[in-house]
Amino acid sequence: MKNLEKDWLTLSPIDFEYKKYVLLAYMQAIKKQFLQVELYPAMADLVSHYNELLTIQRNQEILRENFPTQLTLVDFENWQLLYKKMITDTTLMTEIENIINFAIPHIKNALTEGKSIYEHIEENIELQPIGILSLNDDAGFLIIYEDKKTEAQIFEYKITIFENANENFRGIHTRFLETVPKNIHNTFENLKVQMMKKYSEKNHSTTYLAYSKLQCPLDSTLLPIAKRQLVKFLTKK
Image (cartoon, rainbow, N blue to C red; front, side, top):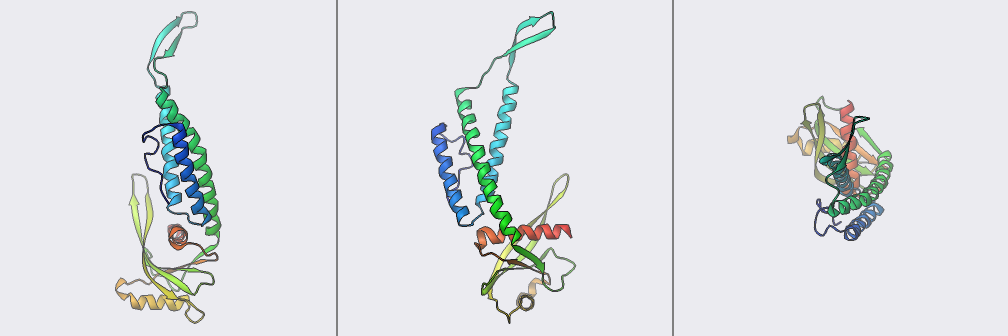
């Protein structure tokens, strides 16, 4: 999918009709991704553009409210000072404002559609620990399996901590290890034992299974959602 440039709004030419064409072409590409149940990186890209437009819109309002003014009349009876704006919106600012007002609802609608798809898939993914967990679950194996598939995907995961002045945030990094056969004889418990033996140097004894009742693209949908579920699960522990 061709992404929308981060600075698409201010790239020349700043023309409403042209920018509308650019945005609608991008929206069409997003729609195509969603029809294929591919959520990422489209969702992350949409969120970034949406937040950027809202920030610019707010800054425009602040700028407009703080335009320099000059005294035009003194109402001595009511002790009111009447002002007029010294600076009004330029043609360029008006054009940008029109583009923003057009773009925000389109991107918001796409986000709503993507969120609906995300929630439907999330509701159909069951996350559960396999066997006994270690005291330190900041690293381990993540098995991703889609219903009725004959294979499972094995990942190594590591939790990372991001700090700011107010609180800590958990992030997750995964690395693909291998694809393994899955059948009634090769249970998830067996897979865990095999992984612990094969990757004994990693010293992992914690394994989680993300079992999906739906079949959907792994890299662009299933894996990102499973990762978010795992982070939320570990945060609540």
